Image (cartoon, rainbow, N blue to C red; front, side):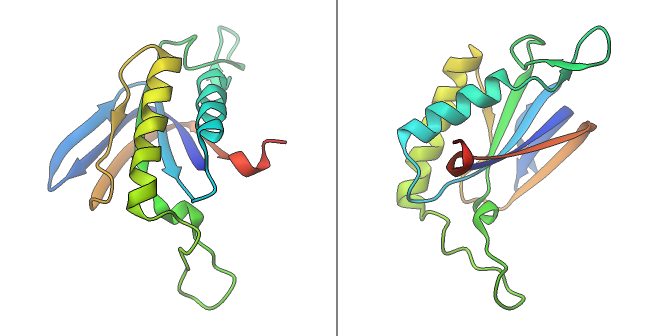
Length: 150
């Protein structure tokens, strides 16, 4: 499971020109799922994201978590996080899970993140042509791959 976390002052996702999810201060999380991902990956990734200390404290040092600042989260599925560009100029997405596996895993991740954050998490629409808008704060962008946790 791969996540690209962006600290944002605002972010939104639209489908067919209609905003279906939005947040103010918090995280935009782009999430990629592969078949080898498990419930353990979901729990580990959600805990890591909820405790990630990348918000400024009173001394302007990144020392606070999204929990500490009562931030919000927007999770958008993004199969292209599992692209391979080793051969040719057209990326391969062979590692990205098909919807029958990825959708339930995506939903479980969102549910786990809601538990860990203690609040509703905004989402995109899996498989839709989404338009994502954001104001990256910092900018701060963090890449996490659960296959690299140990």
